[in-house]
Length: 334
Length: 288
Image 1 (cartoon, helix red, strand yellow):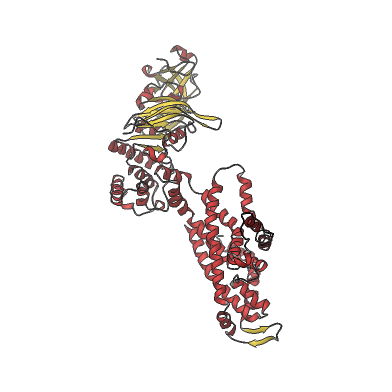
Image 2 (cartoon, rainbow over the protein chains, first blue to last red):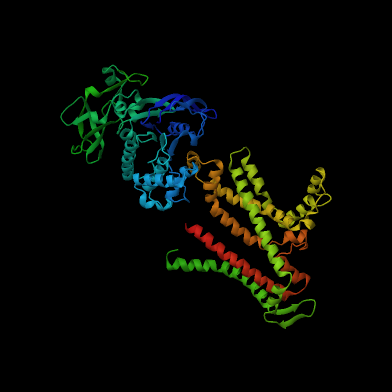
């Protein structure tokens, strides 16, 4: 069981209010991802839930019980840190066993749980090594192992993949998702990487300057972003925003069209422009189109085989059914 | 320093310093060795010829030798225990965020800048004097009989003075070591349910082990040769005669240069044994 509920939580460091009053509920067994640009307060929020920081006001309930004054160790939450925070002088076995040893569990039970965690995470062969002798991915798994053995009510991940290289990151992303399926425990995951958020989350919480901009499933956020910030943050490459006369045609202050919703052709279409930079990924090609008279640059996704060269004149056709409309305050219309 | 040319240039440039240091070391060493094999009594006939290993045998078989070794070890051991234990505590305290941190840290280091002779005299006259010392006043304030520190508790007194001098050094090294501890490790331990005491025992102390070894070895080398503190306080009386002090007495008070030199050679051997350990451990730490 691990339902976590935040009621009117605020946090200030000195005079600076980092988290304005905030309400949030994370259901039992949910994979919630806090995402936002750096400095948006997502790590602070996680540390507040963990109990590593005190609330300025407000309170937290874990499983329906008020846990505001409960020290971190007693909240039944386990945390995986960005730097892994392994104990360098202990072997992997001792690292994983540490929370159990602190709980004064008997040795047979400790051994059983450590072996079990090690086999889930493919660490059995490394139990007698020290963290310094492991690769980044293995260290990450040890950190997760140390969290698993406690059988916590919820896992907290603080940007756990940001120190790994790109290939390993994709692998660990899948492993964590699979672990979530296997354990069915609540997980809260902090990241600045919207790809991680989109691929892993049941529920994404988009934060900006401590405010929750939107909460929803990945596809909800992708399909119906509540405002300009969420629209620009979710999706890669970024959504194109167009203001002025073209937006007025749609009765909006700003319209947004995702690069994947614009088709590009040499023959003819609604908008006209000149190809600037093109990025060839093999499967896809991203064209940056200039001189459209709509915005400085319009990014367009095309098939990998479409070959336009820099300087070519092209025509763009946005898909009318997926044009996002926003009012002057940046809020979604319709 | 890759090419042949730059290597030889480097050698030439280092040569003056190497020659100077080598001379500085070799001349006294050779003279000590030379005198240790001589019967040389400056005020009682001067150079009386070679005596072989006589001086070495006499130095060790003297009734003052083993007590002196024991005193040396007691002082070194006592100071090490006190400075490292208090050093760790002070380092943890100074690591806490507080108002006026910079000034407090400088003040803590201050005793290290005081010359040994001066600090020993200050302790002797201002604190430990049985009539006018601060301790005497304190004792009398509580109605107790003042202790004449340097005669009744001479060894502890000297350990106290020397510890006071070396505490800043230990604190400084240990403080920098504590500051290099990743705070996420402590937070992880906190989440793992470790009490503050457990965090100290399982996380902070193992992290400090290298720094403690370095403090231990560097201090040992310097503490083996403390002299001024004994000279200005007890003058080697009341069981405070260390090996260094014994050598001094043999040379200057007994005017027996040969015997003192033999003692000096023993001291060199002792210091070198410690130095070898130091080099090995420091070297290992640099590798890791």
